[in-house]
Each structure stands twice: as structure tokens, then as C-alpha cells.
Length: 352
Image 1 (tube, one colour):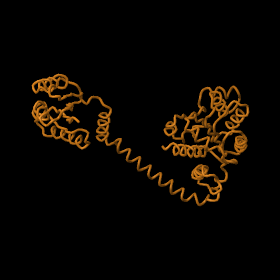
Image 2 (cartoon, helix red, strand yellow; image 1 turned 135 degrees about the vertical axis):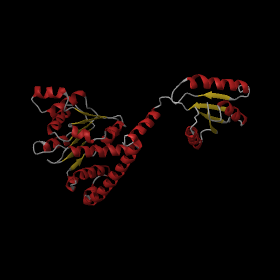
Image 3 (tube, helix red, strand yellow; image 1 turned 180 degrees about the horizontal axis):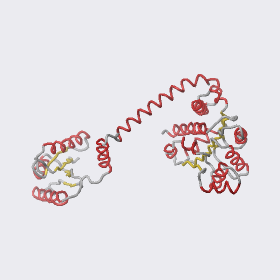
Image 4 (cartoon, helix red, strand yellow; image 1 turned 180 degrees about the vertical axis):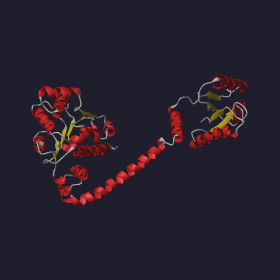
């Protein structure tokens, strides 16, 4: 195989720092071991000069020689002078006849990676955290959060061990999440999971299904980036101008109107997460009964003493997979907990 040599071209300077910087770049490239040789040369003041080094590496048996100018933008040096120097030396040495290929690259240019370097330097001057420093900080926070979650689970599991033992294995992550969210072991016995709920929910998430939520509190608790990995999107209609108009026309609640609009826009094969409004649940129940909606899964956890318990029992009576919190207790955080448990299972199944 022909030997390859990459040569970095610097301008040259009276200051030693100039040459040292180019040499450091070359040394970094050498450590990456992508090329047989990495050398440096200069246009003026410093040695070796371009013609001198070209002749030397040819004598050393290099057959593919690539010159890269370490300049930011095109100028007289890079566009005219360097190409002319290379052309003249190639002709003098008769490199074409010797089977030596000399190539000349573009200056560094406006590469995004250079912009990142500039950004980092500016942030340091301003005393702000750089991208890498932020990553380190966030990874530390994530590790701390993960440790806290593991510690919480080690406390929770003995408290709900009887329920977990009786539950199907796939239901356990949901039960644990719900108890973790509420800090109340009683919820282990209040969460009701349809036998097809986990399979349906995980399949819908992996298929990139729409996620319909009744309030922003639910959508805010779901990690949209994780959902988007599967091609899914989260929709909350509550603040839609059409909803406000429809609620006035029909003399109904905004939550019911929002669900009606979601049904009209199409929510077949979607996951509907209702964490706050019983009226949204009742609206969905009627649509399913009339054959107007066929969601893949309904998560219903409305809270309150007026209609909440009844709406969830209505959901549980449908021929649709469901997860509910029985009774008046519930809330948006529980709808989020159930969904995130399913999302975690979908990621595990997908190997993410």
C-alpha cells in the first residue's frame, strides 16, 4: 500500500509560539495514527519551507502527499502562492512520472467545530460555563439523580412487596413508579392495569404513536426527546383557539372541548393520558362507545371528588387497554409516572 504523508502548512513567524502551535497540531494527528507521516512546513521565516519538505518526503518513499494550509480563510497565500509553489516543485522533481500524487486541501474555513472553539473561548473570557463543563455538570446531576432513584426504590420495594409478588412482572415498573411519585404505598393497590395495557402501550410508543394529554402538566412531565426517538409527538389541545370557541358554543368545559377536538383530529392508535380532567375522560369514553375513537391505550388518573372516580371506572369498562388510579385520588403526576414507566420499557425493549 502506498505510504501517505499529511503536511500542515503554516505561515511562519518570528515568534516561536507560531511554530510550536503547528507542531502540536501535527503531534495530535500523529497520535491518531491515520497517516504514515505527519509533517509541518512554512511559507516564510520558519523551516522547513514547502519545496524543501516536499523533496524530503518524496525521498523517504511517500507516494501520497496531502498539503493542508492551517489558515482560516482563502487568501492570496492559499489561493495562488502555495499552489504555484507546489506545481513548480512537482514539475522540477518529475513526480507524476514517479507515481507520486500531491494533493492540496482547502483552508479550515467556517466549520461548525471552529465555531464551537470560538464559543468556548468567549464563554471562558466571560466567566461562563463551556459546553464541556456543562456536560460534566449535567452528568454529575444525572448520576446523583439515578442514585437517589435507586435508593428510593430500595426503600419502596419492601413496603409494597406483597402487591409486587402478586402482580405480573411487566406491571411492576408502573406500580413502583406510581408509589415513588406519590411517596404513598397505598397507591400500589389503587393502580389498576389492564392485562393488555403494557403490551399495547409499549408497542404504541415504539410505533411512534401520537401522545394526547389533557393538560400541559402531563405533557411537561414527559421527556419529548425520548418520545421523538421513536417518531412520536405530544399534543395538548387545551389552549388551542378552536377549543375556547368550541367550549363556548357547546357550553362545555375546555377540557371536554379539547378532547372532542383531539378526537376530531384523529387519535386512533394513540396513547391518551388524562391526568386532571374527568370531563375529558367522559368525552373520550363516549367517543369510544360510538366508534369515533380507537386509542391504543388510555391512562386515566383524574383527581377529585366530583366525577374523577366515576370517569376512571367508565374508562375501565371500555374494550380498550387502560391504566387507571381507582377512587378520587390521582393527578397529572401519576399519568406522567405511568407513561414514563411504559417509555422506559419501550426503550429497554428497543435496546436504547
